Length: 255
Image (tube, rainbow, N blue to C red):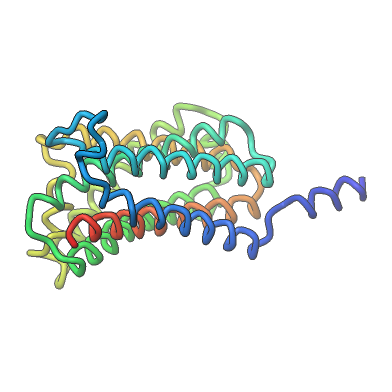
């Protein structure tokens, strides 16, 4: 038993290893989003260029998704998480990338935006994602709900669906509050947030609901509290990385 515990201790990622692995992921992604936007459309003649998704967005999305899946697979192996966790974590992270490099990019491109506008928008939107993750972390750690309710969330699918609905409403309310905050209202970030849940963006609303459900499912697959804290930290790190990638990508499109 002592040997097994020692082996687990050696294989689990330390906080330093987690940070270094995130930095490596960030660095590889930065190379992608720095160079891909400058590939000329004539060099991408095999891709069908349309007004909805550009070839540069498609290539960036595919490459960034690939390295993210590799990272999640590595993290899952070192943390001894289940395949079901990997599927759920992959779904919500890839869907976030899909939103950022298609719908979000198109929304920002509607206006004449500079790097400060893009950076501020990335900061505001990423903060909403992190707020949602923090609330889920507190819920699954048992600080906001009773032990019986906590067990129900982990074991029963109905509980996870109900929590997803609650979180979707919470995110909607948080979006409205942020939309009217001083310093944010009448900005591009506020305009972006104001369009998220409007009828014309039903696709984005559906994607956000799926992201929320997959996130709830992935949190539900984590059993130990120390693993929950690690997964929460990794998730926050990925959200920050995704928005840095997106900001650099949009900046490279402008310059």
